[in-house]
Image (cartoon, rainbow, N blue to C red; front, side):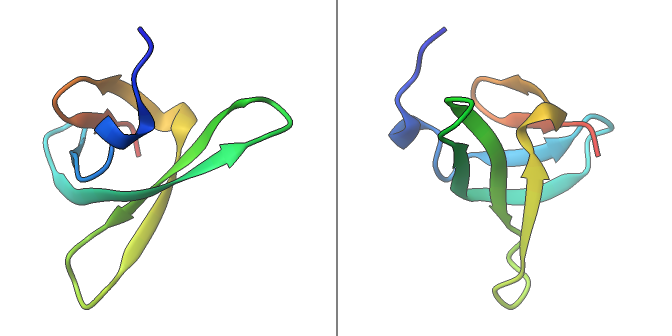
Length: 68
C-alpha cells in the first residue's frame, strides 16, 4: 500500500510487546536503494531521539509496531 510520507509523521511507536517508545519525528531515506531506511523517534525525554531501522517495523497503520 502506498502512503504519503507526510501521513507517517507524529505517529505513535510501540514495541511488539506493547511498550510505548515515542512519536515519529523524522525518517532516513536510502536514495541508492530507493526506500526508507530508518525511523527517528522522539521519546519525549528532554529531546531524546532514537533511530530504529525500518527493517524492524512489523506493522504500520494507525501506529507503528517495531521489533527491538
